[in-house]
Amino acid sequence: MSDRLLTISIPTYRRVDLLERCLASIVPQEESTWESIELVVSDNSPESDVEDCVERFSRSWKSPLRYHRNPPGTGAVRNFNHCIERASGRYNLMLHDDDYLLPGAVDTIVRTVRAADHARDKVLLFGVQDVDLTGTVIRRHRFAKDEFLSPPSAMHRLLRNSSFVRVPGLVVENAAYRAVGGFKVSAHTTCDLDMSVRLFSRFGVRCLPQITAAYTVHPGGITTTVFTPETITHTFEAIDVARQSGVLDQQTIDRLQRR
Image 1 (cartoon, rainbow, N blue to C red):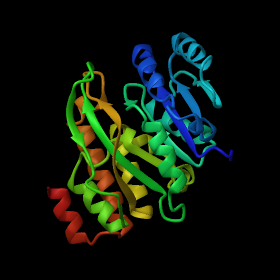
Image 2: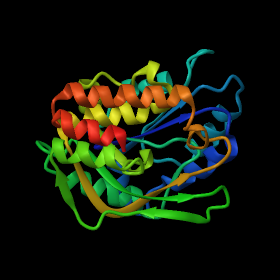
Image 3: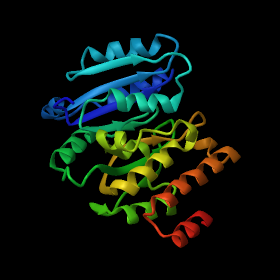
Image 4: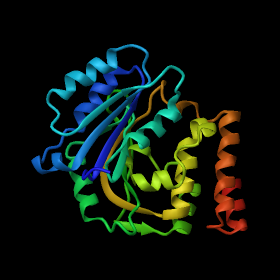
């Protein structure tokens, strides 16, 4: 492991215009932040456009930067796992190429990680705003206060509210990602839910009131194709993982699954 507190991991595939926006958003406003961060870009694109984009960006980037182009057929979920494997910072912010941070967000995240209770705060969850491709805000997901939720409370919130976790708001200790085995490839489009179930059931989650990121809702995003028979099946499988964890009683799990 390096002495960096935060790895910003960007899994990407072909969307150079969106990637440029994403990369521009992670540049710190505070000089002291640079020494605490690193950047990993994990690219599934068959062409060189993304690599060229990252090379241009690297000319003004002041911290470690590693670019990797994955072999054909890697797939999105395996790419997420590559982001975990390649990170050397203590915490990992996985920022998809169609999402971006808000001004000053990376400084806020680093300050929070520096001051975190590292024995307890394995999973941090910041507020996120949903936006369309023009940047117009559709909805804000903000937590009322800084609060740690124990595994039972975190699991209950997660299964009660499908919008509880937005990936660009999630900052996870890299050791915690590895401890739960990384993202499950077979979970496909519900891999984020499955991962949240496994993280929250073991570590709980600390919710923070600052809104740090924008989550883009658009026709090319997974969000727009969630309700398919396959996805619903995988969602029930994630709930079974929650059931098997024993964090919540069976009656509560049954009620949340029906809901």
